Image 1 (cartoon, rainbow, N blue to C red):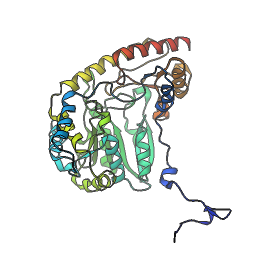
Image 2 (cartoon, rainbow, N blue to C red):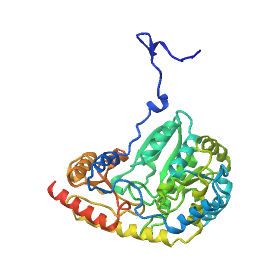
Image 3 (cartoon, rainbow, N blue to C red):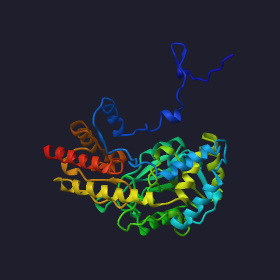
Image 4 (cartoon, rainbow, N blue to C red):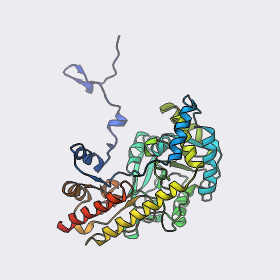
Amino acid sequence: MVWFRYELADLIEGKVIMKWPAQRLSSGSKKSFGMYQEASELARNGADLIRLEVGRPWADTPLHIKEAAKAALDAGIVHYGDFRGTLSLRQALAAKLKSFNRIDVDADEILITNGLTHASYAAFMAAIDPGDEVILLEPYYPQHIGKVEMAGGVVVSAPLDASDNFSIKRELIESRITPRTRMIVLVNPSNPTGRVYTRAELQIIADLALQYDLLVLSDEVYEFITYEGHQHLSIAALPGMRDRTISCYAFTKAYSMDGWRIGYVVADKALMPALLSVTMNDVTHVNVFVQEGALAAVTGPQEPMLAMVAADQRKRDIVVEALNRIPGITCEAPQGAIYAFPDISATGMASADLARAILRDVHVVTEAGGFYGPAGDRHLRVCFGSESQERLVEGMARLTAFFSKL
């Protein structure tokens, strides 16, 4: 006998209409990859696109990292591993966190994940109950929205002030806190604005978390990519914040390992059982030989990573200079990450319309600032890390030609 669960409303002309998919998926925000999706169709038709919309590094993974993963395969490191991640990798990361991030943790407070996306997903699922509110600083990283909603949470945006270079101000965030607020999400260095938040700005978040008993999820995927003396500071290193911060990292950007899908989440021991409950149910554990490549990234020579950051700075300068030469466009030099966020409000066009017009007319793919929330709609996001310097120069020439005819 087959049993169906249905209500009267699920019957149409006597036929059972199955509920599919689950309501938590069908009622949430639709996941979107913005202009990437629109550009992909043109690319399939052979268009010569310069891809400045997708946040991926252009460089290859450094050779010593690839060799370590290949050696692991040859050594037979191909079987089940520790649910938390390889111990040697977690120990190396604990040393890195202590020296670079000034966070004193041990290996049991680190959980290896399939990239930062998986790390943040596990954090939201472990920490958020249905109805809990999660504050995103706007412009926000939009892929966090769906994860919050899948956990049953409610996203609350706290728009930052574009006229003050999207700096963190207490009143802009505190006004969004309610009795249901559970967490503040911080992306530092920021995607899409390129801000590297100062200690004073991070202290505002810390003060609010301590006063209102909140968690902070800190997305630090761009931690190594900073420019001109701007230094990354982990909010978990501030007094009182270690126990209430869930810090998420990845090898994606600095080591050019986006396709490897490996990252890690750092949290107090009290939170680890809940995080493990999520990851053991969705992936069991991360690929073991990939973890050997990650270990080589942490413990091996850092010169390749530093060279990639230096190349990103050169490309940043090309983009910022070219954008600021275009009449009506202004662009602050990003302090970190791999994105310029020019103000395009003088064009009078909505950012999505402008991004589509640029794609259509000159085959340069940028991302609409509105993709990151209404606070970003007067801007475009231009990724200078995703193409070679030669292609980037060509992209800026095409953009200049486009705006000269606008």
